[in-house]
Image 1 (spheres, rainbow, N blue to C red):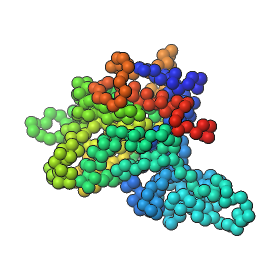
Image 2: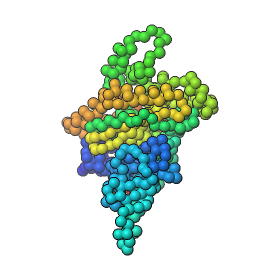
Image 3: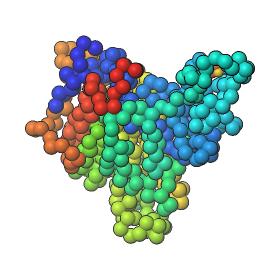
Image 4: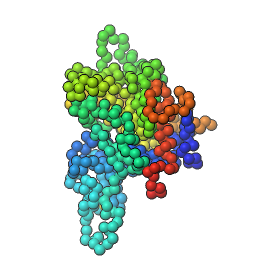
Length: 438
Ligand code: FES
Ligand SMILES: [Fe+2]
């Protein structure tokens, strides 16, 4: 990369190197993904001591582990001896200690080194003062909110609560869809690898202009299958999930969005494609008894299109589904789609979430391939021609006021907000930067 990150982002357009440059991607791993609070996993994935999941954060293998004291550790998945990964599976359970498969060093659930073969060989050496003796290194700060585990490698001096702001209220509303206030991951994960930059996908989560054109064929097919039902007929759930994708621009404009500092956002503050299929009945009554009338109404009314946790996670409230972006390279990304069961709620809520993921986010879905096809083609066509810039001009009139604000549902301010955060997290000077250590 020949230019500094701040020259690649203008108020109303961004340079195509953000998507096309391996150097920009490498710098994102060193800066952006180490400085932001990243979603690691949900604690319902590791209910008992010794349960773990593994993933990659900022290009580094990481382990999320339930400790013996019931807390959650996020550790580098890198043996202190010679660097082997201590676990290889995506999830599992350790028997008492983590044992490195290479030479058998063992670690407690807090990462402390607790044993090794041929221990006598270390007596009289400087081992106890070495890095290796400290065991598995923590990846950074860890924060857990309503079971959602986040970690950040470099601090900017602000607390988790300050960094997340209104997102935590959104998370509370989604978690309170459970009468006991607890979500549980259920039904496995759908992973899709695609050959495009992670930011193309992230933008799309805030892009409510594209369904009219991108998903036209899917919604036309859904309409032709469903036909013209007689008056008063309620379409089956599969159709209730698909047909709203055929809504027009005015629906999406009226959807409403909220821009939050740090690149975060809520799209669909007033309505969304999901507004019409919240199930009530006994469930609504159970929520009112659990949370009180006013809170239950607020929980049921909150049906955003997407709550975006910049840079790599997005949640829906109804259905309760989550997408997590796992960037692999400048032109390669994995997206994971997860479903939640609100504990104590009818199984129909989980069934709706699982059906939504299959219909909309899976590789065999009716919707996702429209987007993924375009993402991969964008990655190939964006570099052609003399135009270096990607336009974010819609509704970009004058300098936006700082702080949270409401916008229309089709305002590209939602996207510009992502790039304000990108430039800030990519800046050379950062409050928590530890210089050349990385
Ligand atoms: S690399 Fe893990 S014990 Fe040697
Ligand atoms: Fe789409």
